[in-house]
Image (tube, rainbow, N blue to C red; front, side):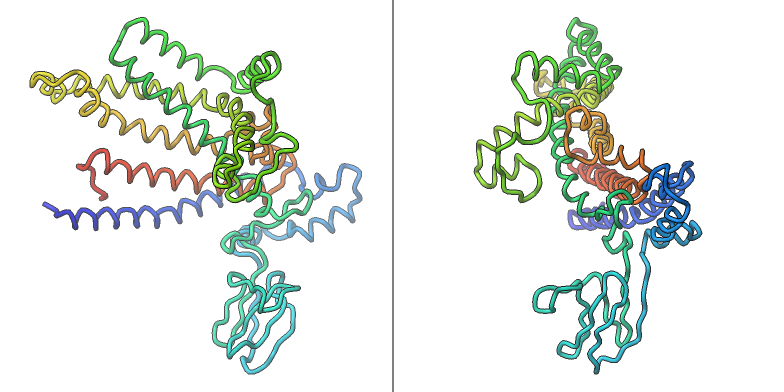
Length: 406
């Protein structure tokens, strides 16, 4: 029998193993995404310049984007970028260009500091771009492993910059949607299981079936028409009204408005969030409600539940203390999966409500074969799935102490 300290050590070791296991998963995802995108017919250079572009211009763009290189070379550059190795002497002062990220080398108290163009060492230097390994300076040009996601083919905008601007909007929308789904679906599933085969059960499951079957874009348009245009209760698009100012701290408008105590902005951001989050919450709400009902019915039929009732426990105590805790285990997995799906699957909702997240951005990137955007967002969504599953695994231990991290 393990002691409390031994259990904690096993849990920490299990979490560490799961974190290490994410590395090959993300590597495999990056390889699959890279391969599938490059198998799609079409030329990104031609899509970038238009149908009437000359062959010379197309060839020039292909050369600039590195599309003439073999696919393995392109994949390696996507991961680690173009590496530059220069052997230098720490005794000298160098002013030379070593790739995109390393522009200037200077001697500083016996060490070599690599700086970005236009910045002095007293202001800022890029610790991630250059590394002083004795007398060898290593510099990189791009690469996902260094946090450089490259530039978009259309517009030549840094993907990381645009991703930082858009991702908080998708996170806020997804969290609001999953919150709505959970607070409605779990009680609905519990009541439906307790009142099995009743009118409440029938109506709940019928509603869940409709929710799963309903096209999300149609529901979004319906909500927009009824509550936005006819009743005028909520705005029909965007995140903030024109004229509303909000200091950006986290990028999550409700959080930023709360931190800065900007209550007019909070009210406005909340009103903009209601309709898209309701539309996006429909499918996960239906799935979670059905799973909660099924899990509750399974646990209600177990022997220990009958024993608890035979001992004289009230029905409320039996349901809350003994049934719900175990019934929530598979539901938590579904909630995690749905949250990850919302992060990467909000394209239609964001398009209908003109929500400035990553959904519409990725849709346009797929249409225009903008490799850097599609690859970067797909890797981000894969990372979110991995992290959410890790959190789900850890939460199992709190709900059921018998679960060990093997």
